[in-house]
Length: 89
Image: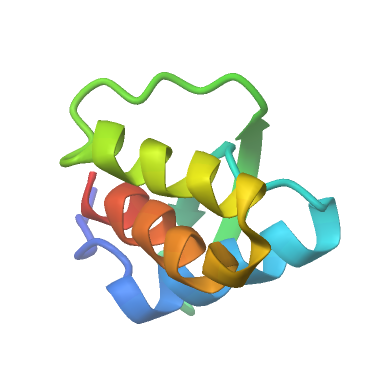
């Protein structure tokens, strides 16, 4: 069976941002598959209590997120940190 390259970071970041807005959640995990024929992404699972094992700099991103909840002026910066950490996984 042919193996496709992983989706681009830009595609995953866009997907996560859209999910964040629609779900009203900041922290979640998402499993995605890629269609072999047209390379579209399909969400197959959304985890409200995902494991973050192996996510680079997750703790510092989590701290930034908590700070943004306490100080809304930091919200976009913390959301970018979390999104970037998840995509790098």
